[in-house]
Image 1 (tube, rainbow, N blue to C red):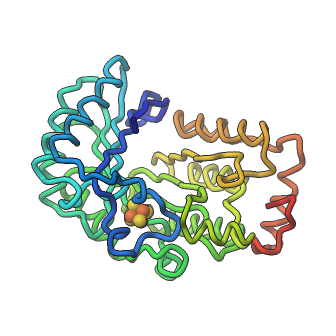
Image 2: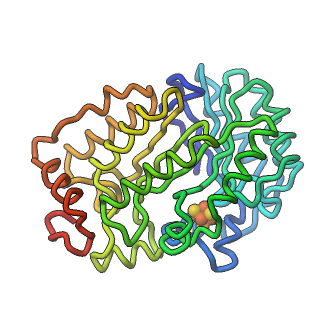
Length: 327
Ligand code: SF4
């Protein structure tokens, strides 16, 4: 079953998030051979096409697992775009929102969409059903630099596309969550930190919540091929801590979320691995849930990895220049 609950920030306060991965046919970019270079999510699309009725029943079942919690966010992923009519028909989307809105404990609803699939009518009708719940459309900007989006990510969207989509979401009465990738390929650790900070500054006027997504190396992707050749290393956890601390202080009042998937593993954000890394991963998650920056006041991990990270960042080292011990 691809739904689960976990502690998370729910419309500004700690609560429980229900994550649901709907088995739609997945992202159309993958189906036309133009998937983002770091993304293998659409490969998880089921071999058999699920009917719209089955998808609705699936959501209904998932919602039952959140029934006992006081303060709930429902976060729906489709390995594609919730607003893509080829994945979910408009009447299915509306019915899903009706089901969710019958639950009084739900305070927040989040769906995802690529920029070009955001349309006023589609968002407006869902916002009306959501009522006074915090309804967010999450858009994968990844970076505000169009060259990086093209060359290192293959996003197929520009910053201008994101601005148009964000304006549409706002005018339709919903909020915007902006996904940013830390760190795109072909960049030093230093450049990756600079890229995400510059993206935050540029996207801030159009964003209500930032989600900083440290790369995890997914199977069958270009990022995996680079990683196998020691030409790509996922970000250091220290970079994640640095960016989150900076962002929270810079963006007074806005939510900054982060779920460092695979923290401490070679495929996920890591320093030198081990329990120390897992502890930093938990601190990041605690910050994300509470928005209390004190969780990020970590000076070192007892293994001296922070000094190594500072060396890598200060000298602007590229990943292929790192020794095996630091990889
Ligand atoms: S990151 Fe999003 S837009 Fe890109 S291929 Fe994956 S699901 Fe599609």
